[in-house]
Image (tube, rainbow, N blue to C red; front, side, top):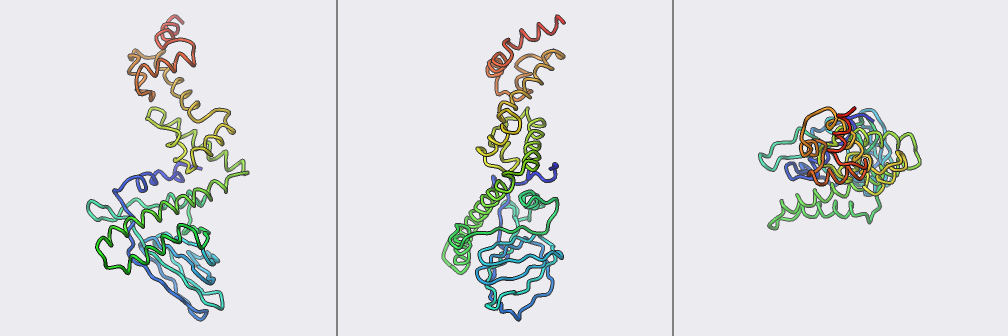
Length: 297
């Protein structure tokens, strides 16, 4: 796993309201087996939910069988066509969406492509698929969006905005569950994920990062990530983070003339008192005692 596969963009898209998902088109269709579609492409993401029947989606030359209660998300500018497969025809819902700035209505240059690639464990890929049940919360929200699109009552636009955010939260949770399930029992894949987390800590130890931040970076739930990290490294993520901070602090104490409180902040501690407590707990001496010892050598 390399830096490009980590969904750094996820935090900016899902945890802020700077850019919001906006539907640019929604369509409900029923096509019989005689219907075919030539290749098309869109400059937006396309989410297709199959309500009934089966179809083959050919996306960037890759054929994908899609059946009832399956969702496929096609990335922008990917050539694709649909061939109805079942004799009963195929009923489906299509949402085309983009990410729009609330401030100036401009479309975000940052997309969820990195997130999609990461979750599907592909360096590059034109689409992702997700299997849900007919009573799934995702399907309920899709149906509510369709209903609201036909509604002319006050607050329609705001309600659609809230429903789209809810849809993406639910999709992200479902994908996270699939991602966690995909790495369980696969030691090589898990090693790769934990190594990505280790690299993240090594590069960001001086920041105010938490277990939640580290787990989010590799798109795992904090509880599952904490257990997997300890199983792989023998240490909890926070113990490893503290170890990295203290090793760097030791270097600065021995090799620089920085004040202790400056070193505390430089390696990621919120204040000198906390730094002193942790340093003594792990080394048996205060930072000043350690510095004096090193100066004698």
